[in-house]
Length: 104
Image (cartoon, rainbow, N blue to C red; front, side, top):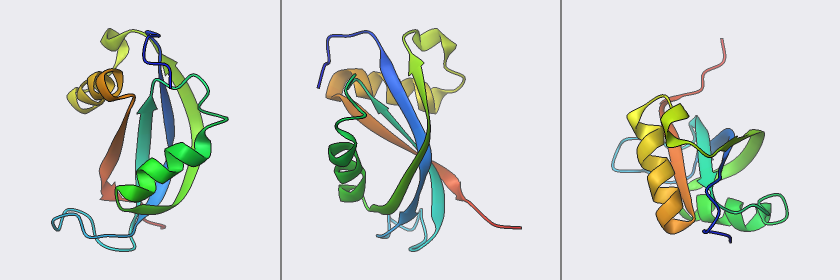
């Protein structure tokens, strides 16, 4: 993975909770996720990125959209800003929406 680039790729999608996370997420619920990564070859390494997410307790991972972010000032909230910083430090960071996806 390339950690030297200033660009972070935000890969949005959803996944099912496959483990209890201190009661925060209910087993089997589907949540919106965002994976922030510095890996410019994320398309070729999607299997590795999905393994990272799966190891954090998520399954049935589907990605829908990718956004390139190179300026932290364009991010809209503290959660994304802290995740951007973690991704720059660690190569990747996962954000999960606390509210499950429901079908109406």
